[in-house]
Length: 130
Image (cartoon, one colour):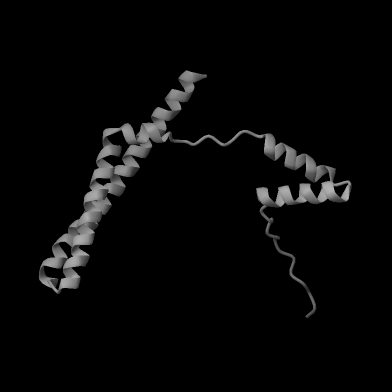
């Protein structure tokens, strides 16, 4: 009856703010939290994580440019359909609404294609830099 279940304990995620607060408290108290202070210093000194895709490459690709254009047209058509529904033109309102949905799907497909290609080109660029 009084048994406690021993399960996996969730590991608490340590944020940068938590580490900085611990550093401040250790400095104020003068306590021996040396391990925590060392982790804070390591966290501060480690370089920023590099992104897998450079945005300049992503948006310079033809599919990246097409993606932004298709997304913009889809948004405009969606706004037009909303305005038409407010005006009470329900019979014409469905055409731009379905067209906008189709363009959103096309822009997502273009985004995936452009990102895949940009990721490969970014890796090639970084390999040539090193």
